[in-house]
Image (cartoon, rainbow, N blue to C red; front, side, top):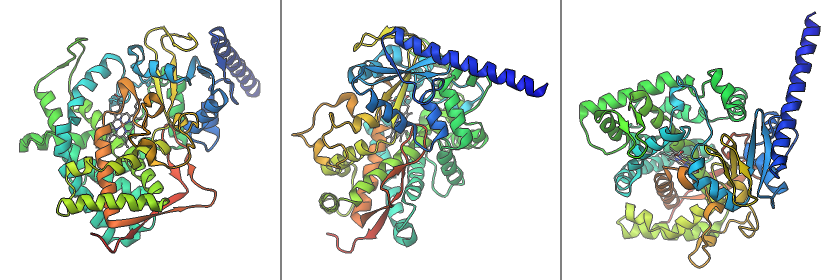
Amino acid sequence: MFLFLSLVVTVFILTFAFFIGCYNERYWKKRGVLFDKGNNNIIGPYWEFLTSNRALFEIFGDMYRKYRNEPAVGFSTLFAPSLFIIDPKNVQYVLQGPMFIDRGVDYHKEDYLADNLLFMSGDRWKLMRQKMTPLFTPNKLKNMYNVIDKRTQDFVQFLHKNPEKQKRNTLDTLATFCCNAIGDAVFGVRYASKFVSPFLDISRKAFASSWWGDIRFTLSSVSPTIFKAFKISFFKEFERFFIGAMKQVFRQREKEGSKRHDFSDICLSLQRSGVMKHEETGFQMQPTDELMAAQAFFFFTAGVDPTAAGVFGAMIEIGRHTEIQKRLQEEIDEAFYNNNGELTYDAVIGLEYLDKVLTESLRIFPPIGFSTRRCTETTYLPVGNIKVDKGTKLYTPVYSYHHDPEYFEQPHVFDPERFSDDRKQNLGVLYQPFGFGTRICIGMRYAKLQVKSLLAHILHNFNLKSVIGSGGIKFGKDQIQLRIKNVDVEYIPRKLRR
Ligand code: HEM
């Protein structure tokens, strides 16, 4: 009896899945859009993601190459047809369009830390984005710079005193620095605090690949409705510690009454002003500790994971291009020399060659491989006149554009001069390590400042040597990120400095 029942259920599920796949395929065909069956007609590229060791951006990369000249290609994500947009005009339309402001992530009400700026939708996102934007004004960044600079100097001392850290696990060590720097500059949390080390662990785990993490991510992507209905949480395990820690930070700041004009000060000032209200939409939200902690949670995570990846990518390229490294060190040494052995905010901003090197390394290794949006109002894409229904999830390339030979000649060659004044072109969506349009990374300027300051101090003190394992650079199996594997960078103390 049991065997018979199992057989009936299996046949039912398979037949149902078959019809879902056919429905999704017909759905796109009716709109004149090619459909990618890949090796699964039910959850499209997510099947390969779950069953292979490849990062999702690499799987989208295959689709990009296969349909390179199409305006977009459809695929199946369970009950909802999804669209991978390829033509840059269509991508620009999506990333800038008011009918695509949602990222397309759903979460249930009690998953408090998921209620952050990255995941929020609609009016909720608009209001929070408006309230958080003042955190990264040029003046605030200038204030934060002094703290970043101090933490960077600590990091260099740490490397000098711990020669074993100069030889391996570079990315891990960089993450420790990033955690301290953002903790102090943005939240006013110091290195010695108990708060830091568990947080470093959290920021590593929050978006890391694991069997359950990948299934959860897949389910949230292919069926946000089921995900929400079953009350599956993204970040429940971190909630107790993180919200508790942020509450402590807020209460301590209230007691001290200090004015650092950082994230914690902004949160307290929002709480003092009562209900938050968006001027145009009239949408309201209460700035509770939980809501503020959720914003802090993602800022912290972003300040550690993609930021460390951004520095690491640059170090790999610098460490395998001696001439570029030498030229960079000359520029950096000169800046230190002209500022009495220090590196001021203006000096970092003035490091033009470093800027080009970082811009190019973020092209080669963008820490995030693709973007997503959800359509909130039925519309037509300009190229191909493709009808996009409300609720459709859209995917747009990042890594694939950066490595397309039509847009970047010899894309695998590391050439910072691509971004020199005489060769620079207006790349628009073709270059977007920090995303593009309405939901572009809010921490971009902060991240660039922190990365440049760190690279400048490192290169003033050390030579870099990249050690690449056999088989070349590889990428880890990851959800949206690009995690560089099979390579490390050694720090070799410099003897002679000006
Ligand atoms: C090198 C480091 C970083 C990289 C490469 C990076 C990249 C990105 C990308 C690609 C997005 C998605 C943009 C889009 O969909 O168009 C994003 C969003 C975001 N990033 Fe970053 N990021 C970095 C550092 C940071 C830092 C340091 C913070 C905060 C302190 C931050 C906060 C955010 C937030 C809040 C969002 C969501 C914005 C929204 O949806 O409105 N990021 N980032």
